[in-house]
Length: 124
Image (tube, rainbow, N blue to C red; front, side, top):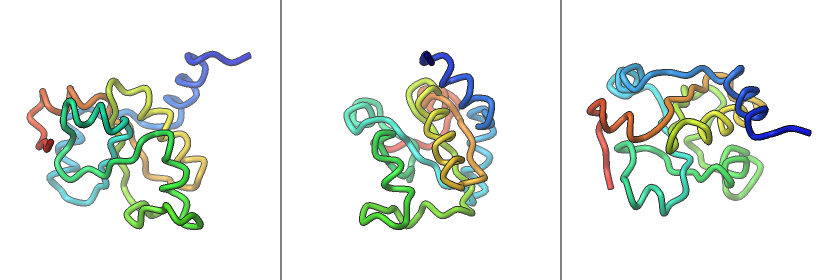
């Protein structure tokens, strides 16, 4: 039987973790797709990365699959995807899912609060 810890360890083994500072450098370069995988109520309460795509983790497979009517066209297999959530766990799990779906360039920046504390651009 697997535990939440087992799932997180497996995700962290395949999804590289980057710092907020590395994320800000990617943001400033303008070549990365930032995705906030938190629920809309969490984003409404704290804000998110300016310009980030908002895709709740529970909806990610549908948004990432171009064969569904819910596909987000920004989600292309060759995109440099940077995931963020509340503390890093949901982003890691979402990253593992994307990798399994054929997205190769995926990283986990961890929690939004760290981005904000590092001075990353934010929006409501």
